[in-house]
Length: 51
Image 1: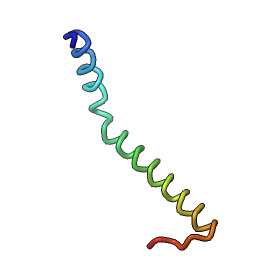
Image 2 (image 1 turned 30 degrees about the vertical axis):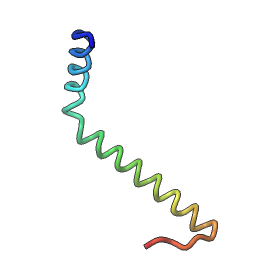
Image 3 (image 1 turned 120 degrees about the vertical axis):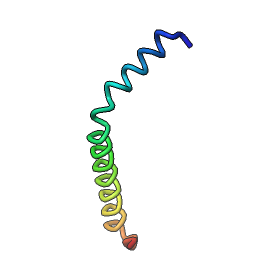
């Protein structure tokens, strides 16, 4: 791979590092919301809730 491209990728990843916890929290919140919504939908359709 071209070294300049690799260096740009490393610089980009390093620029995201200070925000990694925020990105993780947003991802987990979105994932939890999606799973909760799907669970409610399946329960509404008559499937038993999973506990």
